[in-house]
Length: 179
Image 1 (cartoon, rainbow, N blue to C red):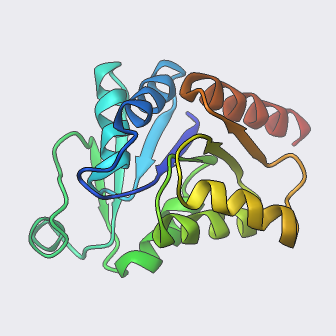
Image 2: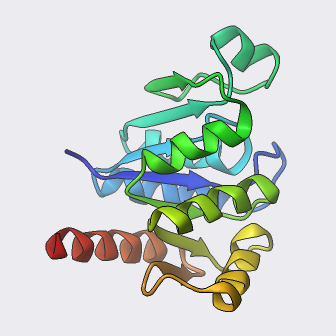
């Protein structure tokens, strides 16, 4: 079974850091992993675009109940995704399904929704890659984790998207060898 990496971050269409997010998507695809997102716009969608440039397989986990709601209520794209899973659980429910479906997650920035996904990943003991140098939930989560109990060796940081993905995959390989 192929490794499944979630890319989480700002869903704002004009979010800064799109090139870095695209690079993250490319690296995930080059590694032969499947890329999962919340099926939204912004940085996660930029990662989808990067993965598709490398022939990667992409999955969107939507908060919507069906394609119509995904497109009309949420205003999210379907193009670029090889598979779309419609949860019908809204954002919070979608976040749990997304994170639990991943071997690890990479955060590109984001706000409260991304912070929610990171706290779920923390609780689930997932490997988490935090892109440094972009303001937002990832950097704030790192501070919180240090204060509140950081999972030993589960949080990886780097300002370089390629190195970040490589470190996450290396940590996942180590985790698999221990199992």
